[in-house]
Length: 100
Length: 487
Image (cartoon, rainbow over all chains, first blue to last red; front, side):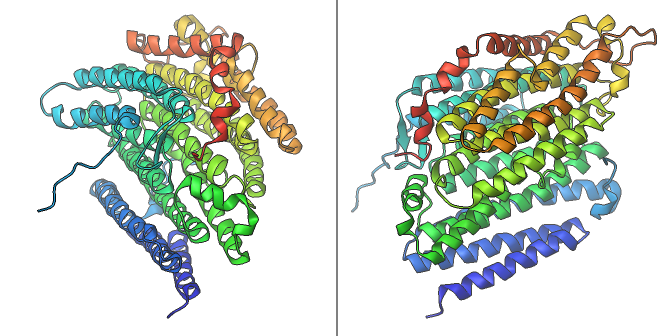
C-alpha cells in the first residue's frame, strides 16, 4: 500500500504549482486554471486523509468541492467573457484603472 | 418492497435560512413578470420574517442534520446583524439602483442568494456547511460586484473573483489538512480532538498547525486582512456604492462569524494560529489606517477604512471566546449601522460611481444639512469618539485583546486610532466650512427609503452609544460564546 505521506506530498506539489501559476501568469484564464489546480490538490489531500482514517466523510467532501469548482467555473468564465467582449484582452495587467 | 420513508429532517432551525432562500427564488422566478421595486418590497418582507423566526429560535438551542446546522444564540445574534445590513442595502437600493444602472431583478436575486450563504455560515456546525455557505456568498458577491457593466465594475469584479477564488482554494486546502489531523469535519468533534494534546501524534499536530494557518489565510482573503487585502480598495471603490454597502457590511459580518465559529470554537485550542493572527492584525491596523490617511477620494477612503476596521474587529478574535465573542457581537452590529449609514449618504449624493473627492465635500452642510449632520455622526462613530457606539465597540475590542495578554496590540490599536481620527474628521470638518462654489453633488438625493436608512443608522449608533446595554446585554452573556463549536 502506498503510504499516505506520498499522496500528501503530491497534493502539496500541485498546490504549490497552482500558487506559483496564480502569482506569475498574466492571463485571467491561466490564473483561473491555476486555481483549479489548487482545488484539485485539496481533493487529493481529502481522499488520502479519508483513506488513512478509514472514514468516508472526506470522500463525500470531495464531491462537494468538485461541485463548488464547477459553479466557480460558470461564474468566472462569465465574468471573463464579459470583460473580453469589451476590451478584447484578458491580460490582468491591463486592468489597472484603479490604483493607490 | 422497501417502504419509502421521508428523511427525518428538523426544518425549524433552518427556517430563517429557508425564508431568505424563498425570497431569492421568488426574485429569480417572478423577475420575468413584476418590476424590481415590487421584488425589493417582497424581499424586505422576507428579511423581516426571517428576523422574526430568528427571535423565535432564541434560547432554544436547536440543531439539525446531527449538529451540522446549529441555531444557537450566537447564530441568532450574528444572523440578526446580517439581516440589519441586508435591510439597509435593500432600502438604499430602492432609491439608488436605477441611477447606478443595477436595477434588475437579478440584483435582488443575487443579493438574497448571498444572504442565504451568509446565514449558512452563521448557522454552520461543520466545516463543509461553512464552506458551502461561504461559496454561495462569494459567488453571488462576484456577480454583484460585476453587475454594473461599466469598465470599473468589470475590473473590480474580475479582481474580486480571481483573488476570492485563490482565497477559497486556500481555505479548502486548510479544511483538508484539519480533517487529516483530526479525522472529522464537525466543529464539536474537532474541538474535542484538539482539546487534549494527547489525542494528537506529533505528525498530526504539524498537519493541524498547517491546516489552521491555511484556514486563517483563506478567511484573511474574505475579511481583507493584510497582506490579503489588496483587492479590497479596488473592488469596493470600483463597484456600485450600493454593492459596496453590501460587501463591506453583510459579507464581512458573515466571514467574521465563520472565523468565530472555526477559530473561537473548533480550533480554539489549536497551537500556532494566535501568534500569526496577532502579527496580521497589527499589520492590518498599521497599513489600513496609514493608507486611508493618504486618500483623496471619499469612496476609496471608506474602502480603506473597511480594511482598518478589519484590524479592530480581528482584535476581538484574539480574546477569549467569552469576552471576544461578546465584543465581536457588539462591534459587528455597530460597524454595520455606521458603515451602512455613511455609504447610504454617499450613494444618495454622488454624481458618478467614482464617489466624490474629499475636497468637494466643503460646505456640504449648507446644501444638505440633514445628510451632513448624519454623515459627521457616522464618521465620529467610525473614528471611535464618544458618545457614539463606535467608541464602546472599540473599547470592548481593546479590552478583549488586552485581557488575553495582547497588550502591545491594544497599544498599537490605540495609536492607529489617533491616525484614524485625522482622516475621519477632516471630511467632517470640511462639510461645515462655508463654500460659495456651486454644488458638486446630486441634488435630488433626499428620498424616503435612503433617509429612513440613514436615520436608522444614526439613531442606532447614538442609542447604542449612550445606552450600550440595549444590545450589549444580549451579547454579553458568556454562556452564548462558550459553545461556539456546539456540544
